[in-house]
Length: 202
Figure (tube, helix red, strand yellow):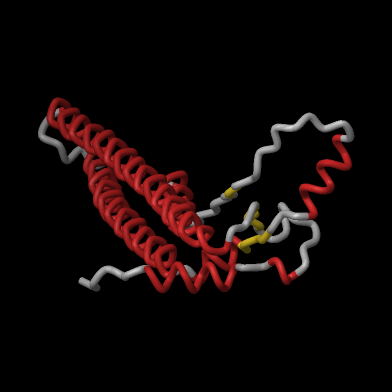
């Protein structure tokens, strides 16, 4: 059960780390005689920005709602498995006590009870695997939904803002240095939240 608890904690600490980039570069059909000079000339005319993913994850309401829902489901799974595990452990302890005190009517009866508990343990492991796989599948689905919502918004957003490149940045893993003038995180978060309608609370 320690491995199960470790997996549950990992899933509960859900982190949607999404790296995205959108590129709408221009095509140059002419043969370049000086590749470096041509590249520099093209770069000088590019419109570039970046988005801080950590901030996006913590302030985009859709991501917050997905995370809260996954944490709740993970906790429900953990509670279900813990309850069943405790009940099984209690039955196993009772079997051990009866066996040591020769309380079974016959060795056959003791074996039958032992087999029943072994089957319960097997069923619990299968249930654990099924529930954990279900959580991982939903987590993957949510990651795709999150990424698709970002990409769909940026596609509309860039129709008017016309950036050539929008970088993602997670704790400066991708950008060693960037002028804050190129940071459009707040604008993106505000735009995403403005068009997101939270589901009604049950």
